[in-house]
Structure formats: C-alpha cells, structure tokens
Image (cartoon, rainbow, N blue to C red; front, side, top):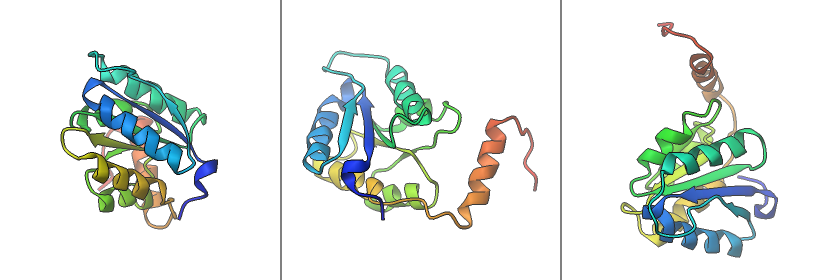
Length: 159
C-alpha cells in the first residue's frame, strides 16, 4: 500500500470535457488529505488537452509531484499526450482493478479517466485504487527497463 495521503503531491488536469469530473476529483482528494495542484482547464471552454497533459507529465518527471490524474472525454487523448514525455507512464483506467494494476505492475505515475465513460463515484474509486498502491518491483522491473530502452532509441525488439 502507498504512503500516507498527506505526503503525496498530486497534479491534476484535463480538458473541457473533463472539467466537471476534475473538479469533483479535486474535492474528493482534498477531503482525503491529499495536496493537489490543478493544472487546468479552469472552465468549460475548449482547450488543447495535449498542453495540459504534457505540463502535468513534465511536472511529475521533474519530481514536483508524486502522481498525476488527467481527465478528458475518453481518457485516451490525455494518455497519449502524457506518454510522449520520456520516463512517464500514463495509464487509462476505467475500473479499479486496472487502476491498481497500473501502479503495481506498470509503475504508472499518471492515471487517465474518461468523463464520458465513467461517472463521478466510479472515478473516485478508480483514483483511490490508483493512489493506494505502490510499485513493488519484481518481474515487472525488467519490462519497464526495456520500455526505457525503447525511449532511449532501441529500435528493434530482442526476441
């Protein structure tokens, strides 16, 4: 299980489709004692979600935050954008099992959610499952190391 909530620094962001769910999640996280920084959007006006996703991912990569949450209509676009930041693993989760496995098997630093896919109560449970778990190491370490090699320019799989 993860360290105490008050010691985790959470970066959150999303686009206009995810705005209301993001606001709900911020309230939920504050009630649970998390330190949360909102990277926008701050209203329901259309924005370019890659800008928010990459900003959150860079803040996590730089060590300013421990975990991130990104919300758009499906959770797909923000995941794709965040994963363009080297060293970042953003995982889309629409159930609690996937959210927990994103941490325990893949050491994901960011969970992405689709506001048009999950309702607020399920989203809260997904975020709780994501934040409650740590990466234990084990067999997944070698797999994550290979992903890092691909990020560094390894061109062909070693089959």
